[in-house]
Image 1 (tube, rainbow, N blue to C red):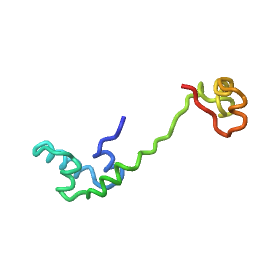
Image 2 (image 1 turned 180 degrees about the vertical axis):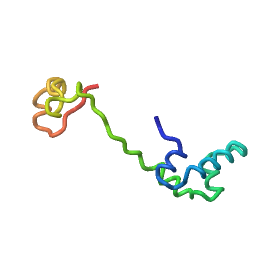
Image 3 (image 1 turned 45 degrees about the vertical axis):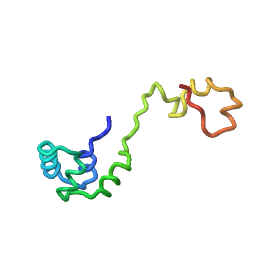
Length: 97
């Protein structure tokens, strides 16, 4: 699930919780987009919003043990699905869909 703009700005420490609350109240009463409301209130600039939205949030990826091979290598099905000529000469392996 994608984070909302307010959550992204909080995470980036561009605004605080009180500013988000005030901006949400203002948005509710006047309408409009939250980013525009925050700009009007002077909390952030358009560049702040663009910068915040352009960087993906990094989250750890969890790979279940059932998909990992022995000792963390590739699973047996990935090696047996493709011909050896395809996988042995390359450092990467295609992932079946």
